[in-house]
Length: 327
Image: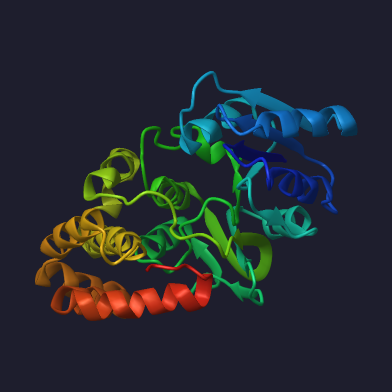
């Protein structure tokens, strides 16, 4: 088993992350830590833990320049030796039984397992979330469900047979949606995908956060979507599956809009992104999304007809769920 931990400027949180991995009830793993040229002392924290613990399962890799999370994951994948691979973000944690239960769920010809998440928001009670669809699916079924948000788009709530990465890795240079694009490809390559409810991944959200990073643009999605288009089997882009593939692009536009909404109301940059997304989300696109995911289609319709109303609803949602302040 190979656990991949990309690190960039996470000095305050990374020790707890590493501790949660080393505390797994299934101790048969290697931990590949990739420092992506941190500037806040993260590498020093990691090196100090390595020297203090002398745990042979830890391997630290360093980038000479900041190259992004996709590059960090790819660096680790090139060094990984385990039959399975799992990822963890440098400010999150594993439940103590994450590796044991996820490995058990990989039984038979299952190539990928998705678990639920415990969401911890600073100053609030934690809660759990899981993919909307649970069970055992073919790779094709899982890929189409992932295109319309029926399976979570994250990298870190999954265990993956490493051989699925033979033909591709994560799209380097992608500013957004690299996880979603790569997950769809992984699902498509899998024989079976198992989705379980157990909240084995701990997702930490700081209550003081005003945003979730920089404001994305539509062009930010290009690298990830081009990566998906290049590697996705042709049959999953045409015929009876074309509606899912087309719906994915509308879903991505809606997510870009949501990221812009989660910013101060007076932001001119955010308003510009919202206008561009609303223009791209046509009535035809909305109708296509409604066929694949009625809830997302309805959300896209409300955004198209009344962006101010949709924005108010979304700001209220992220304020209550994640403690994100937008004004």
